[in-house]
Amino acid sequence: MGTLTSVDDLGFGTLVPRYVVTEEPLSDHALLQATRAGDELAFAELVRRYRNQITSYIYRMLNDYDTAVDMAQETFVRVYQAADRYQTDYAFSTYIYRIATNLAISELRKRKRRRLVSLTGFFQESEGQKEREFNPPDAGPLQDAVLVDTERREAVARAISTLPEKYRAPLVLRDVEGKSYDEIARILETSEGTVKSRISRARGFLREKLSAYL
Amino acid sequence: MNCKTCQIEIEELETSASLSDAARAHIAACASCRAFHDERQSLRNLVGSLESVSAPPDFELRLRSRLASSGNGGGRSFSFLSFLASAPAITLAASFALLVAGVIIYKQVKSGAATNQPTIAASNSTERKVENATASPSPANTANARESKEQNQPASVPVVNKETGNHLTARNKNIIHSQQRQVNSGNLPVVSSDSAVRPAPQIKQGVRNPLTVVQNQLVELPVRPVSQPVRVSLGDASGARRTVTLQPVIFGSQDLTGRNLSRATSSQGIW
Image (tube, rainbow over the protein chains, first blue to last red):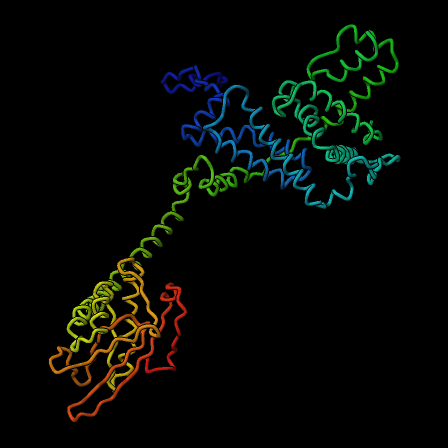
């Protein structure tokens, strides 16, 4: 019995076209224009493209998953409601990250006003104070390398969450999200030089906090 | 290249870019810049090792409901029709509930209109009677009657037979409520007067008066609004007379006149 190499080998007597129609994925701009015209499927596609990125970014900013999800949803609500006013001068990702950043920063300021004490708050230092290290790296050998990784990541996340907001956003955008300086400057609506300076300061803070892991 | 320039280049290095040849040569020769480079590199790796979190599975569902709920306040309104189309059971149940509520409200409005119509008609008829009821035109009565005409305010005071007191009370409430509805609808001006300044009008029932009291039958005497006390004299064929003073009774919306009218409760009179 021979090997089937093609559907024609099935011998149904009908010719099966050998070409496949591939759909070019629509750009973010096109999707937003379609959303503006009332196409909800286009908006659903935008949500599908950016929901994880935005949730992850806000999570790194707030270090609180539930609030991050809530803020991410609010970001999409604002994108939807302001679709008519969207300008195509710059990338859609810049636009949506700017909204997410503003929401995250305003949430951080709200928390600061309320003096919200979260569970992780006990492990966070206020600005200018020496960090209390509650999870020092164990000098002894650990059996499970996963535990080490988890501990290290938690320490990094906590260290980031203690950064002042003006340093936190550019650092997360740069070193976690991998954005370019130019795009970060547009997201934060500031100059590229300011962004570079703030990232350098943020790394300096992190270096002090994470010296045990470096 | 000096150390400062080299460290700036290390610091601002884009993710995908690599150091220039001059910087690489400097790092190879300078121990402090090499340490700086290694430290920054490990810090980037450490921060970059953070795993990205994912949105929850019900993210879109929650977003959809959020968009639907914020549709009224926002610049764009989320199409609720697509949501209804995706939930036909809810749509059907809501439509049925709306239909039933609509039928009930329609029936109530229809029955309410049917019961109110005779009362209003009776009230209008009493308006005509008030002109005829002024049988002895004293100057005060004439002025009051003219004023009543000008103000176009129908009012009625029931004459009570001893046996029919209870029936009269309920009927009287209906009449006054219908008058208040007319006043509230803006057809009539709200007027009240102080009986301490001007005496209450007297309505005398004469022989030629069209208002003849039949036994056990309600007779409505139109007078000025209920803000004034009303004296009603009743006489029978044997000449016995009885005078009844009816104190004004204030009902809720009449407080809008802004006057400090004395309130009479049900315990103060036969009302």
